[in-house]
Image (cartoon, rainbow, N blue to C red; front, side):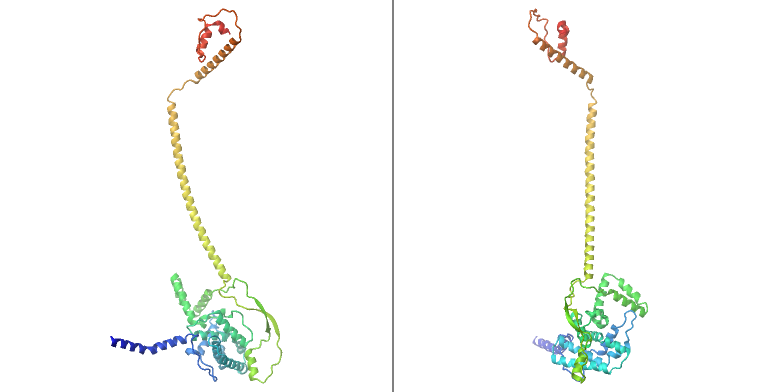
Length: 442
């Protein structure tokens, strides 16, 4: 076991150089951990990690091409102009100046780099032959150099993230201020072709989008198969249009704009590079005068986290869709409950009808049973009722009259002539009245 452990330890030690090499490679691919070499005063330092300037220039030229026609703006002249010794030196020194400015500050080296950039820019203006393309390219030089610096950082340090507003703004502002003396348009980098300037990141994002599309369906796959059958130029135009349609449309932030401050603006726009060159390497005096104009400019940039109008519209549409779905669910629930209530009401009505039928049936049966017996004659009942009422009236009159009549010396009627009768019986009264004519006359 001791021998095995020693062999394992020896094997681990033999792998240490390879592990150290891998760690060094990973370390150099991060811009924050890269170790800058010595400053070379004779020639500009090369790009790190074996990246070639000609490849970066090719990325910029392809990024300047028209996405529909595939043609680049004077590609041959661009390649010749950007590959010239002066432009090449400006690109390399600007790369290392920004590297020191952001990641490893060194004012002494930065001053040397800026001094050499100023001399190369002056030589570019003085010694390069003049032509129509040269004049146009000089006006586009700040934009071209900014794109070249961005693609160089992305290619030299692939494990670092440069697709940020802060980094791209820093590059554009620095180069435009050096060459023209003024700031560029805010967020002028939005329309850059990142598929050429940062191909690795763009390829990864494209693969991720393809995976999402494959999860959603296979329609894109068949569409790609159809596009492969067309000619190369039509295919390039279709892909460019498809890519342009897939890009998010620009939308302004839905908030109050940044505060504006007044600043002095020189309408002649003196270049700091030329001013530095004339001050240090030329005996010519600076003639003329500065014409300053007060202008207003924003102090801060609206953060990217602020939602845009497009985001608010999408959110409103999503809320409307959710509310529509909720309303549909409530409507379905309402109609379900209403149908249940209607069914229950019909059942109750049927139950009530059955009960009423039973009640009517019992009433009819009872009425039928009553009709089986002969009822007494209503005429006889009414006649007896009238006779009884008349007898009572006559009897009451007779008794009242007898009470009022004074006693005389009439002979007393015999008890035989007086007949007892029942006041409540009409028949006995009539019989008594019929037996005594005198009483009947009364």
